Structures are given as C-alpha cells and as structure tokens.
Length: 323
Length: 268
Image 1 (cartoon, each protein chain N blue to C red):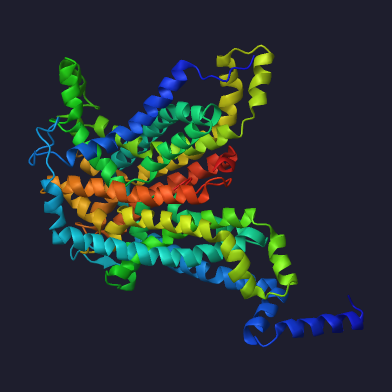
Image 2 (cartoon, rainbow over the protein chains, first blue to last red):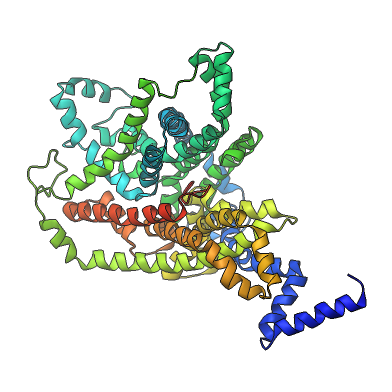
C-alpha cells in the first residue's frame, strides 16, 4: 500500500472515475475516508430532533414538577420547591396511584393468561396459511384504531347492548345483577363498573402481550420438548419445567407494554368505569381544567419512576432479548 | 413420541382468544347500519344506509379528517428521513453510546403516551409556544421515528455490506451507491415503515389531546363523541370507516415485508 507507484495508480484511477462530477464525488470520497464524519452526519438530525423535542420536553416536565402553583393568584411560581410533591402524597392522590397500579397488575396477569394459548398455538402448531391467519389475526386488532376499540366496548357493555341481551336470552340476568351488586367490582351497569374498565384494558392491550410471547416461543427448539418427553416428563411437566421458563422473558416483555400502557391511559377509565380516577386522568385534569401543570407533572413522574424500576427488574430477568 | 396435533383445549383456547379480539370490531360494523339513533340497542331494530349519506354531508367530519391526514403525512415524511438516517448509522457502525441512542429512539413509544403529551405541553407552556398544526406534528413525528427505524434497521442488517463495496469497486461514488444500490434494497422496508407510521399518527389521540389546543383531528372528534354522545349514528359510520381505512396500510405493510425474518409492525 505504501509503494509510491501503487498509490499513484489508485490516485489516477480515482481521478479518472471521478470524471466530470466534481463536488458530489469529492464529498463522497471525503465521507468514505472519514467514517466518523459520515456517522455524525447520519446521526445528527435524528439526535437533534429527539434530543431537543423529546428530551427537552421531558426535562421541561421534570422542571415543572419542582414548581408550584400560587393558591391566591392561580399562577405558576417558577421557583424550586418540593411542595408539589408533598401535595402528591395526600391520601386521595395515593389512592389514585394504588388503584392504577393494582389495575395494571391485574390486567397484565389476565392478558398473559389469555395470550399464552394463542401465542403457543401460533408458534408451535400453526403452519403455512394458518400462520398468516394468526399473524394478521393479532396484527389487525393491534393496529386498528384505539378509540374505535374502546367505542365498541361502550356498545357491548351498554345496558341495552349485546352483553345484557345475551344474558337475558340465556336467562342469566339474575347472575349478572348479583355480580354487579358486589362492592368493589360492580356498579350500576357493566359500562359504569370497575369490571368494565378492566375488561376494556385487557382487550385493548392483549395483542401487545401475544407478540413477544410468540416471539420467545418461536425460539424454543422442538427437539427440546421431545427430549423432555423422552426423558419421561408428562406434557404438564414439560410445560412447567421447559416451556414456561423459556417463554418467561417473553411474558415479561409483554408485561412491560400492558403495564406501562395501563399506567398511562386516561381515556378508557374516563369512558368506561366509575368516577374513581386513574393516574392518567389526574394528569389530564390537573393540566387542563385546573391549570395546575406542576401537580400534573409530579403525577406524570410516578409512572416514569414505576416503569424505571420495572424495566430495571425486567432487564435483570433477560426480558429485552425477547423484544 | 412426537405429536404434531394440538390438544383440543389448546385449539379451543386459541380460537376463543382470536374471537375475543375480533368480535367487538365486527359489532361496530353492525351498528353502522342500524335504524336506531338514540340508544345502543341490540339487536338493531332495522337496517338502513341513510347514515352514510348523513356522514358524507358533515363538514366537521371532513375538517377533522383533513387535519388528521395533513398531520399524518407531514409526520410520516419527517419520521422517514430521521428514522432512515438513524437506522443507517446504527446498522453498521459500532461506537460509544450506541445503546443510549437506541434507547432514546425507543423511549417515546416505551413510556406511556401521556408522558410524551404532558412533557410537550409543559415545554410549550415554558416556551410560550401557541398550539398549531405544527405542535401536533412535533409530537407525532417523535413517536413515528421508531416505527420507520425498526423496519429500516432490520432491512439494513439483512442487506450484505459487500453489495455496497462491490458498487464502490465498480466506480460508483457514495451518493450513486445510495441511489442505485442501497435505496432499492431498503425501499419496501421504508414503504412498510411509512405506512405503519401513517397509521400510527392517523389514530393517535393521547399525545394529541395535549398538543392540539382547540383543533380537532379525527380521533379527537371521536373522543368528544365518546365522552358526550350526540351523533351516535354518525359516530358509528366514522368508526367503521376508520377501521376499514387503517386495515389497508397494515395489510400493505404485511405483504411488503412478508418472507423476511422481521415482519413490519411487530411491536407497535
């Protein structure tokens, strides 16, 4: 490479192929010789956007949560204080946080139970055309409009809706009414009960649970299951000791979605459910009608903190390999 | 002992799960044709096509649709450029801080939408920025980048680096190589990513409620009808049309990336 003759030749050939193009070619050569410059040019615009728009806003949020609102004027006082976080810790607000986390956990577990058979069948038995059916069967609900999905449940759970009609046809209206009279889960009708909120959450986030579980199950080699059978394990034992541990990172990956999405949602509990609030609704109301952006910001920090802890735990369990 | 047939209970559970996912969407379709216009009565007392005509003549629906399409188109365009650039950089090079950058790209979709929403709202508040189409676009483009990025980065990984080297050896410069070798290779992945980004933006409501002010995108129009139902039949028709319209890009993205190891749309 260092022979003068050779380098002169490459120089000459480069000059000849460069031909009449001039600037573009010279720039291209420069970028080829200096990969770091190319990398900087490629990464610059997206990093600038995400850094300024996204991280900048997150920082603004964090900053606002340390401001406070002046009780007399209703204006935001832009001085550092922990007063807003103090307000966050009142019993009423802690109750909101507890209700949200509890629902998110319950939704996550239920979604995992419903998702597992679908994912398992799709990963292990579905072939050819059925594989496509399962794939699109999960993908279409995943991508169809969130609001339309919520709306469909408003129709289903309404007093004059299909579910009450079905219970009536089956002669089970008494059972539904007995269930709705239970404290804690019941209400006036299904669409104004915590059960309704829970059902809609499970429905809307279910595809987010199916996909990662399916991805992790696809990676379990069939030979491993055969080996387990050959060694005398019953199907239930194979499931408990081979399949479940291998699929668990997928379950955790799915739970990151269902948990995080439930923590931050404010539309579902507003449309279907009781008047008891969730974190998302508190954030929305404090920034909107109340105009108390600092308290809204402090409320928004709660899901960030919870998700931070959860992600840290999930990372230790190896969940990110299944994403 | 090798059984290739699924146990019956597994088939039943999987089928029931899929039905659970699809029946609610089908119910919407039935409601779009109902003659009942005051309640959500089931079964519908009769069927009619009149609500399609009524919806067609509603200027507020058209206005909301127009804004949604405009926002989705601009956001998709921005996301396509930024997502492809990021993917090109991340697919090949190894450098310090790489993990941080991939986390940064994914963060807007990993954190709940309300966080992105309230963050942007706080930033607009601190910066004294007035709401406009562009404040909506700022939010949408940010979470659309990751969709394009995911599709592009998967394709870049599958495209052999020797193709680029061969092109350079044959005398093409970097820009010619990009135009004639790289771009044709990643074009379908970009198209798929762009379609998904469009669908994502078109449907987004949580971030939008924080960045729109008084403007109405189609999802915001629907949200108001959900909270205070005034035009049930029109809402039913809009809901059905929205479902049908969003199915098209999803099916398109699926067929464009079929047969590759990573199919578009996994993990919204």
